[in-house]
Length: 49
Image 1 (cartoon, helix red, strand yellow):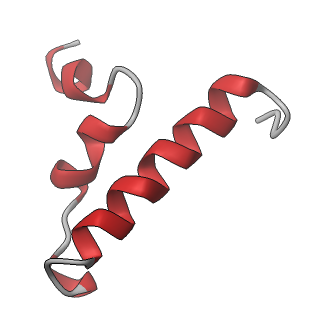
Image 2 (spheres, rainbow, N blue to C red):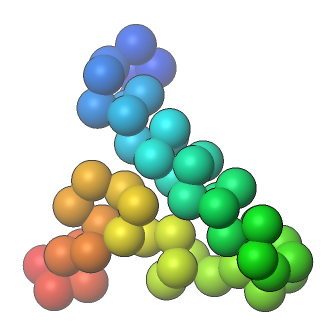
Image 3 (cartoon, rainbow, N blue to C red):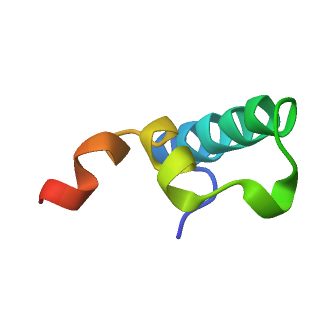
């Protein structure tokens, strides 16, 4: 994984932002991957691939 790749950077930023938004309304142990996946580019379609 190339950590200077803009795709990697944007994906990490998107997931991190979604996590912090979810943490504002629910505890960490209640956050699921399913809730975070749409934050990743292409994440909402990943299960249908």
